[in-house]
Image 1 (cartoon, one colour):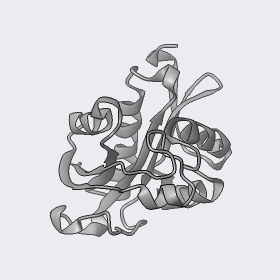
Image 2 (cartoon, rainbow, N blue to C red):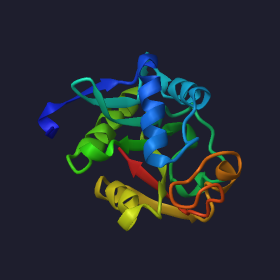
Image 3 (cartoon, rainbow, N blue to C red):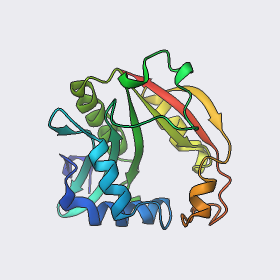
Length: 188
């Protein structure tokens, strides 16, 4: 399949089972659950639209982007709002971008990001923050976000450790994750 065969849609509850399966396949068992995805879906909705997107090739889920609308999520201990140079209620959150292995390298992840940005802008956001996996092969996650205008805010060692101790199996570390996150902001 080529990127010309890919169609993009707003994330819907009918997509949840496929999104959970792909997320856990790519990121590790326990990364997504029905409860988590239901919450993430609600956090993406504002002004009648969801910032979450999916990509399909025919009947196959090629990828997805989960994003939270500004004002629909709360910064936690892994966030540095004082460094964002914007009020937190004007900043969206990019939860994750996932592309099925057989569809990687076709620009799908970038297109999912651009479509989420357009939705977030319509919702009133002025920027989006993400925590990028620094141990991704070749640090591809950080490089990808930087290519789209993302700027490093702060590094966070052991970002996903507590999740791994609570049942998330990191694809690199297993149930004792010590991966670091690059907190990055992308202004619109």
